[in-house]
Image 1 (cartoon, rainbow, N blue to C red):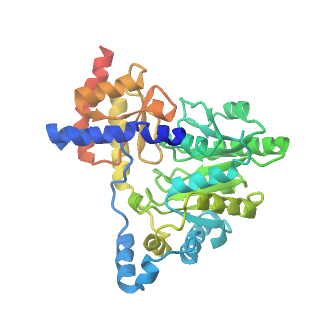
Image 2: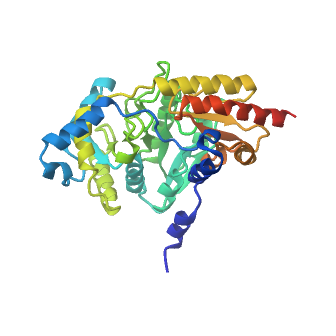
Image 3: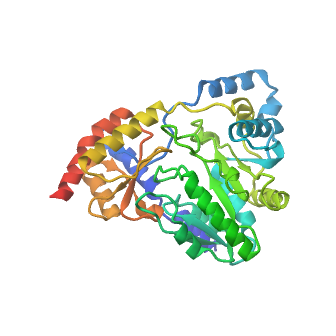
Length: 397
């Protein structure tokens, strides 16, 4: 006998992973040059040189027990101090090591924060479509109810009227993901300030804080000087979950953090509850070697030239063909309106007829759109353009 809830989670298909696996198999048959895989958001630019050099230096020059042993559950002070100093310089904050809890990437951080904030059995976590599908199991597997705000399919900002209609006294938090996966859109300061005013008013009305959980793995991936506001400077009851997977191209090294600023109401109790939630999930400490690396590399930034070239090429070519896309100012995704309106049918047609692998928006609770991950080779994009052209022409006929 097993827990049926977790059995369902363990056997539920992942469209993205299935597409990726399909592409690998097809490549064996038709050749990798004839498969156009836009499924997976796996960073394709190399980590900054200092990251690789730091790993070598740490392995060569640091006591092996320190490199391979446990740290404290919250992480090494050296890494947390370096991260706090970086955030303070960039955003004018006054963070300290004690405001940070290091995690194995953003996902365990999100789970710990959600678990910590689900104070009652009927507690609600709000999300704005389109959103990362794992927010649902992160919430529901911990006893919470996920409340979905419909997508603003014109600008892909946050529809504040729709948020207000869904806020209740049971709302504990709203998850904000900007730059957004899957749309690539950055929420503007005006949008976030409007949300902050709404949440402040409703928090006062309900007699308890409504937190923002800022899921920020793409914070550094932004183009053309577009501002990505640091949400704790806009709304005081903000808890940040961050990952270096995308910014430093380290998804396999599993390193990130939770930031609970002093401005958060009952911040010490919130921090302790997050630590307890992480402990209940078996969190011991994030990888020691990569903590030591982050202590040396917290100020490193990605070279986005390749992503930006891909972004501009794909957006320019697809819109010229007649596709409608949200303008992506961040991350490495393009969210395209599916010709014919049925995103799943479009994705299946693209896969079967052209070996073109794109992800249906239904999985992000935004049907009628498809996601393209452009952290791929520029050459693959150019080779895939005839397939995109043939697809839209077929729909036009």
